[in-house]
Every structure is written in structure tokens, then in C-alpha cells.
Length: 205
Image (cartoon, rainbow, N blue to C red; front, side, top):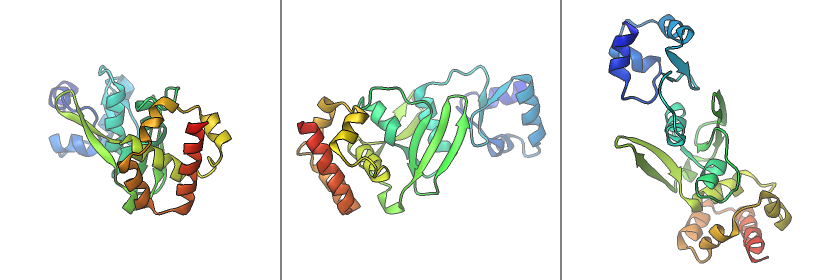
């Protein structure tokens, strides 16, 4: 299959891998992808995914890619906290959680990192649609905070939270938040409850 023909068929798809190409041409050989990479027609994303070299890639596209590369997963932790303007800095790459093992992929935009949680904790995310036909999975603010505290037990004092410089005005929306309390109950972890109590002391300081 010639690249011009391939491009016409794949142009509406943000990212693709070898299996996607073989759906278009079952005789397609991996070496052709290598040739297109060398020619600069396509660029490597991560996890054996690629994209057309002349395609502009947005932050939402990266969120979309994070889900495509490693399923099941959803955007959470630092990326979600930046999304909700809880942390002041921009996050390079995308941070997600998954019920699979912890994984890390390097990319042109930074790391696609996945922290492992139990399958029973894979909840509290929403489907975000954009540009008409694309989507990604994003943790709710409540779940992003609990995921972060669950996976970062070293954050255990008011001083630790001060070092994180979280946006207090946005976090105070969690006060008397029934959804947050329900999610905390599902985790059913005394140590997590203790860290949430410390977070509230930080907010009251």
C-alpha cells in the first residue's frame, strides 16, 4: 500500500498501530512502517502507536492516546489535578491509573505513566468527548484526589501538602461533598481516611 493511499484512509484516525494498518491491508509488512518513519511521513507516539507527521497533537489528543495505548486506564493523578487546576504547574506527558501492572512509555511529549490499582478501584471517571468523534476518560476531581493520596502514602502531614502547593480555593469544593465521601468509603482504607483528614487540616490552616 502506497503512503498516499494509506494517508487518505487513516486521516480521520488520530493514532494507529500495526494492527490498525493491517485492517486496511492484511498483507502490510512492519518494515513499511519503519520506512515511513525514516522518510518522516509518520512519527512514533508510544507503545508501538504512530501518527501522521503533519498532524497537530493537542493535550486532549494525548489524553485520548493514553487510553488507547494501555487499556483499561483513565487519566488521573497529576494530569487530572492539573486539568482541574489543583496544581499550578503543567504536567509533561500523561499520568493515568490502570488495573494492569504499573507501566511507563516514553514519548515526544514526555512520559505516559500508568500506576496500578486494584480492579475494584477502577471507578469515578467520566467520558469526555471532543472534536465531534473523539473521546478520553478523565477521573472526576474527587477520584483524582483519592487516587493520588492512595498511591502516594508518603504525603501524610500538613507540611507535605504545603509542599505540593495545591489550590485551596478549588479543593474547598470537596467540603461536605457526598460523592467524595462515597468514593472514600469504597476504598475502605483507614490509612487513606487518615490522609484525607490531614488534607482537611491543610485546607483549614
